[in-house]
Structure formats: C-alpha cells, structure tokens
Image (tube, rainbow, N blue to C red; front, side, top):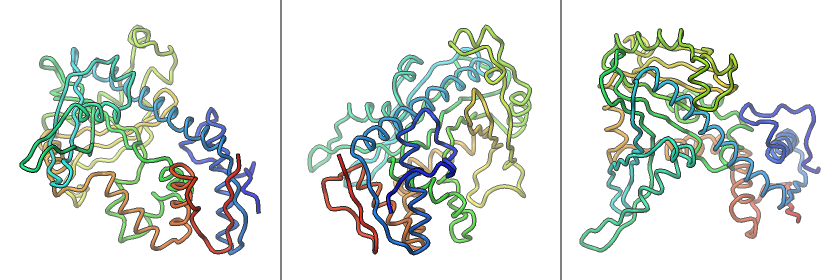
Length: 352
C-alpha cells in the first residue's frame, strides 16, 4: 500500500491551498490511516524533499497567522485603548530548580511584525544568565505574550490587550492532532473533558477590563465595531468587508456563576472571522486575569505545552495508532537518519 493522496479526502481546516506539500503529506497520512485502522498492513513511502517543503510551508503558515493576529490586535487597540505601547512578556523556567520568573521588555509593532511571539520570548531569555551557588544556569521559555498597554485612561476601562498563540507545537504533533481530531476525542472522553482548553488551535486575543460590567460593554462594542477605510489603509490592509468588521460565529458567557468553569476561569469568549481567518477573543476581568497569570508563573503550575503533552499521552494509551503516528511524524521531521518507528505489518520507507 503506497501512501498517496486521496483526492476525496478532506483536508484539515487549518490547512490552506497555498501549502501543497503540507496538504499532500496530510492527505497521504489520512489515506494510510484508514487502511491501517481496517487492520491491513502496508508500505508508507515518504520523500525527503517533500518533507523539507512541508516543514517550510508549516512555518510560513504560522508566521502568516501571527501577522494577521497582530494586525487585528493593533486595530482593536486603536479603537479600545487610543494610544498604546507594546511589551513582550516572557515566563521562563530555570533548569534543574524549575523556578519560574517573568521578564518584560518594550517592543515595537515593527519588531512584532518581523518575529513570531515564540521568537521574541526566546530572544529575551537568550540575553539572561542566571547564577546560583552551583554556577550559571539557563532558562527555558514557558510562555510568551505580546501586550498592548494604554498610555492613558480610556472610556472602556480596558487595562490591556494580549495576543495568545497556541501554535508553538512541533509540526508532528499538529499533524497528528488534526488527523485524529484530538479535540473531538477529548470532548467525547469524560476523563479528558476538563483538559479541552489545552488542545484547541486558535490564534487568540485577550481584552483585560476592570470588572464584569466593563466586559459586557466591551463585548457589545466589539459586536457593532467597524474599522474605517482610513484605519485599514494605515496598516496596509484591504478595503474589504472581511477586514471592515468582526463576524461573530460563536459566543459563550463564562462570567455568570452557573456557567463558570470548574477551574474558576471566567471571561466572555467568542470566535470570530476576520480577514478570512478565525480568531478567539476573550474579554476577562482584571482580577481573574491576575489569578490566571499568577498560576502560570508559579513553579507548580503546568504550562499549556506540558499539559497538552499529557493529553496526547493519555490518548496514545487508548489509541495505539495515534501513538504510532506521533512517533512516525516526529521521526520524519526530527531524525529520519535513525531507525524508523515500528508498527506491526507496516513498512516505512524514506526516499530521496
């Protein structure tokens, strides 16, 4: 059985036609999955050249998504904050001790446009050397956000806007998540449902306000908001309806006590279409935001990335093919010179 694209297979929603090598890889793996789940063995053939192209396309896709995210965040900041400045806040974890800390530096919109949020956080930590009684230590990046902060009061009582990007995962994890619809698996499994927030893949913006009443005022404003042509022009955006307003496709109220999540997290949460892309927008009171930030900074709190890994590990125990695909994609993209992962009845071949 050759792993070839199936023209009738549906490409995952996060794929785009401008990424042909990535699409071809995913479609091939979708086709192979159906055969393997039916209990039939086969031969999986992969090209080194096309794998290299798929990696490049994935990186470009993430960069485009972040660029559009910050374009929208800039537009919203102009309307909600008036004048504002930008800061990059990185949460780091010291090796061995696992102590966590936050470091914040001022950045410009130009710097944000040139770099991914992950790159910004990594560069911040690269400047640091941390000493203790045993010598110098390095720090790993736990999380990084870009914060849009007002330079003065604003009528909506907004304290800041933040971008949140859950696209830092390695490509093999992303592909396998989509192939097996990990989000659906987690929501269906009662033991995993409480972890569902860690597996969704949405570029997000968080609007931090003073109190619940402010959150509802901001939410109402966002639903009626229109970006004038001049504002789009200044950011080099098209004068098109898709860029002129937010199209709300989902809204959930987690501020009211009966609907609050068991974790204590509260916010108004919406999914919107803008500029042909999908984004999540949260409007969250300041007290809950500070509690959430403090939990992320504490040493005892597991980061989003490590928690997602735990979700995947638990799913892999239930679905052996999911585990095999994770090992297969990691091998293909990290170290194809090593021995290929084993699966009964499957022959994996890498060609030039």
